[in-house]
Structures are given as C-alpha cells and as structure tokens.
Length: 332
Image 1 (cartoon, one colour):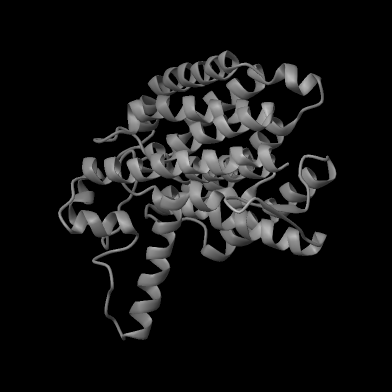
Image 2 (cartoon, helix red, strand yellow):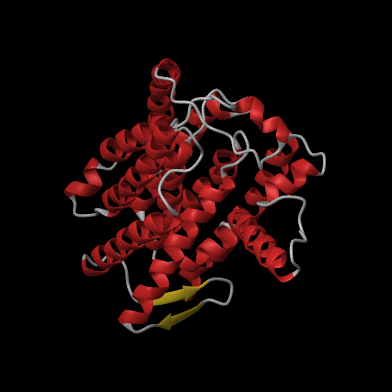
C-alpha cells in the first residue's frame, strides 16, 4: 500500500463529506431536527438549543464512499477488514440514529434508555469480535504496547474482554462529544495515528479506513467547529467511536486504545469519579461539572481553549501510540 493511496482516500472522504454537509445542514434545519439542551449543562449552552443534530450522517456517507471505492481492490483480493469496520460502525450508527430519533420525538435530550443502549451495543460488539475472529482477521493473542509482550488468552476470556473494551470505548467517544468540534478534533490525531500504524505494520485495509475517517472528520469540522452549524448527534458519535475501536481490533492490538484514547478515558473517568464522589459524600462534587470538558468550561475556559488543549493532548498521545505500536515489528 502506498501513502498516495491513503491520501487519495482521505481526500475522497473529505470531498464527499463536505458536499454532503452542504445539502444535509439546510435539510436538517428545514426539518427542524434541533438539539435539546439539558438545563443541568452550562447556562451558555442554552444558546445552542435548536442547532441541527444528526450531522454525523455527512461523514458517515463520506467515509462509506471512500472505504468502498478506495478499498475495492483490497476486498477483491480477500482483505475485508475495512468492510467489517464499516459495517460494524454502521450498526452502531443505527443505534445512535434510533437514540437521536427518540430524543427528537420526545423533544428532550433523552432517547433510548441506558439499559437499551448497553444491551444493543454489547450484542453488536460480540457479533463483531466473533466475525473478526472466525474470518481470520483477529487472534486471541493480546499484544501489550510499550512492554512488547503478547499474552495468549482463552477464547471466552478474550471475547468478554474485547466486548467490554468495545462498549467502553464507543461510549467514551460519545461522552467526549459535548463542545463544538471537540470529538472531531480530538479524534483527528487518533485517525491519523491509526493510518500511520496500519501503514507501518502492513494492515492495508485498516489503513484505508483510518484515512477515510481522517478525511471525513476534516470535512465535518467545516460545519461543526465553533460556532457549530450542526452537531454529530449519537448517530455520528457512536459511528465515530465504533470506527476507532474497530481499527485497533483490525490491527490486532486493542490495548493501543489506552494511550491512543487518553482524552476519551479522562472524560469518562471524570464522569465516573464525579458520580462516585457525589454518592460517597452526600452531594459534594469533586469537579465543577462532569465530564471533564465542562469542568474547564465552568472554570472560565472558552470552547476554543478546551478544544485546542484537548486536541494537543490527543495529538501528543497519538504520536506516542504510533511509536509504541510500530515497535511491534521489531519484536515480532
């Protein structure tokens, strides 16, 4: 696989996403598909009430077109990793779509219940791992980055661990989507790093999917950067999270998600810590507000600063993750 192929795939995804967005945003606005803002959020976020949601559809289209066209040759030769990644992410996007649709129908920022989403996501995660395992695209060997150790796990143990990683990762990305452009900006270095890792280790189809993701995110940011003209909604954030975690599995190194997704983890942990501390202290809060990006907003940071700092942190760990994963060749 050539670098030029990755660049072309990214450009196709960017172009299709940008064109789709030019039509989608006015259509969503005309259909009054507006986001409801919870009263418990930062007061100034109420100004965003009514901003069209489900905008993730634009990069779903762009990434899908880029994967199917750019990866056609790989598919014909039997490398179907990018197809599995895309199908897996599309199923998660469907769950997000139902969640967004229910929230819009009820005219409040609550769609499917947490229980419904969890079991649906878990079922899809198990299905993905089983398909990847039995098509030879995934092993039960668990590669540990940085220490360059591979641990062979029993099949049931690997299935449980993999399913937990997938559901946790997808929802961590979903939690990060709370400020204009944040989830997309933080995920861009992740996508570029995945493309570089895939190129370095010879995972051609996964590299194409990662390049398509990077291009789609840039196209989406035309409409989502502050002040956002559209939000990605759960439709987009669940798709985004699914692509990212499935890329790690397609490269047979799911644990690379730990350094690669450090911002997602910090966001999720801040939520968990806040809730736990609140219950243990009878109503006290450790953070001004959770998840973490809201804490910094409440501390006086502008949305630009939150996005800028979080993206820089993501970029630094994306580079670290690349070198950690690329070292696998030397110890293979």
